[in-house]
Length: 317
Image (cartoon, rainbow, N blue to C red):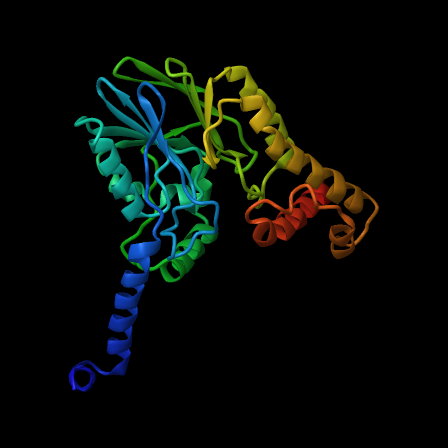
């Protein structure tokens, strides 16, 4: 009788939406991965996303973010993949300090790192100037439109793209409360706007998506030649800890870069030879020996696309 009465008042479509949201909430309550702040230095923490594709089931919590507490405020590195995630990150920060977030530094403008930006109202946002090209692109708009559907309710019509307040184009030092952060562009590599954040006093380097740990990298429209060079140049920071864009923090930097290096080199080797010999992509892909990587999370989801994009890149080279 209650359902019939609701149907009369609301109609089947509205009732279906309400029931769907209720069931979604019940399912999510027991399946969401909790966010935990992991300390990597006296004043530095990070949170680690899942090794998965973004979805409503995981709230788009698939990337890492970090924060550095200084005497004058908190510097956040990357903003996570939804406003709700960013709010949860803010809650973890408040458990450790009452100081406000004064700065957010972006390692790059990919959706899983920026959709939480609007939660940091009042903070300065620092990013590489090439990020403006992404923000003004049709790709950024279409990706947000798709995310509002695919990752509802975490990303919805209120989620918006937020530009930086400070765009940089070269090595820049940001000093907050006497703590020096070195912002160094290393793109074009994973993206045109790749930026790493080094905190010398903490011995910590935030690499963004130049380093993936425990999963297949997302290559997209990368410049893989420069990406390999960027990985090598990161060793010059001599950091004790590297916080990657995805996966656990590393205290054995050179060793833990090996997986990303080996994968990118193999892509370039196999797809480059195929492009040179004018072997069709499908034939080249099927010939390649992927056994060293096929056990990694997201191999099935990302490897073919990565190989195809690298094939096109090698054709242009």
